[in-house]
Length: 149
Image (cartoon, rainbow, N blue to C red; front, side, top):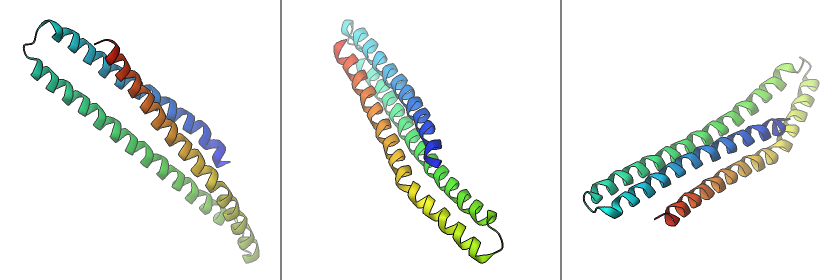
């Protein structure tokens, strides 16, 4: 059940990630192209402009890195919270009979252990999709800059 809940969440996270990185990289690419086309006519002040562009690009990459770290931190903490709640729920829902408690705990742990590989697979798929989207958007932005300069 947890894996079924995780699939739409990963879809939403990857889609938002793709849109965000595409927006950032395309904005940077369009800005670079505009600056380079503007500098073709005059060479004055080009060093200052390039420094400002470099600072803007550095700031964008720092933002992307912070977003990656925050999203991974959030995902990992949510998975552990859900796992903790499922274990608490299975312990609280079991009765006062020790045999019933041990049987329910055993089945809950078995079910949780069966879902752990699927959870890690979904999380690794999400992470690889995020990295792929980041790379594709970066390549697209660099391609746009090289084509238009």
